[in-house]
Image (tube, rainbow, N blue to C red; front, side):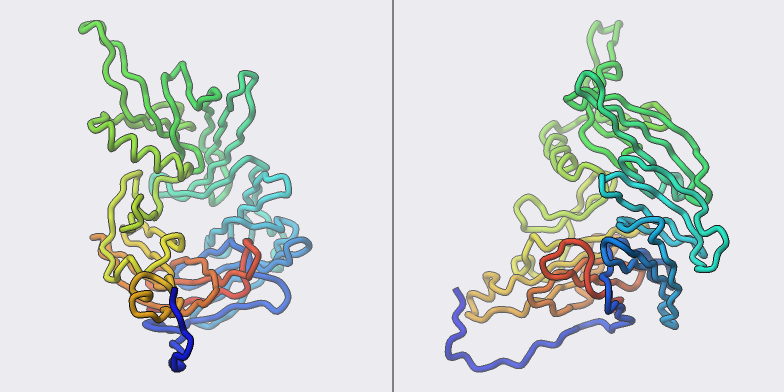
Length: 374
């Protein structure tokens, strides 16, 4: 335990190190919800009171000009947001947990603000497919045998046109016996299922070929990839992690021993080289955002009573350290934001990052949104 009795007062640590504040956004009445989007020049967020009103704000970073659109009639609980020029796409969640996806005009005086609406459905997800942004609309229904049917339709985000539809039936053990396929995890709005595909019967050798890792495209209705299992131990350990995450194959995670940070892309892990000692951080504080160009941003919060601080008998300032990760896996600390007893949500926009300061005792949204430039 660190004792501070009789210690001389230390100078207050600086609030911000290594970065400059581009803009800080707050609202005197409501709170800033979780759905936040950016493009090269703008940041978009929703101010809501949680029950009666929701307003979308799109702020130009260069001028701080704010375009505001009332989206109360679209959703009171936005959970995902995309900017598309003069339009925006929002995924909203209803009280029963169902989701809708809506494309609408940003101009508040538009005669027909809503372009299209998808859902309600179990999940509505925007993701990249074949170099384009697509929308997956998934409906999960219970089957008589205790299993589930996963029906997924694919849509163009620019106009909502349906590009395809398919389904995958699974029993209570997440398996499809007809396909000889056991699902372990999903990605791309549950339009792709990953798992173990049983081997094929080889009449020449009078035996089955070994099981393989299979990727099943629900919309196309076929396996789009089969990969041999060359290391059963590695495959089992990797699939355990992917099953824990469940709905994506691209994420940031601590290694099992908390001694390193891993970036997972396409379901494979790569350990990062941090330029700071990992032992000083709280492993539960890790956040990350992956960029399409192979880079990433991660954030870790200093544990004030980490082993080094205990050895010095002085608690460390509770900084949130923000790292930029190069495509070669080297993570360089680019900023520190003082956050004593404060929770942050990290996001990125190319050469900048943003932090949503969480409200105390409330898991939804936060009280301020700040954009920083290292």
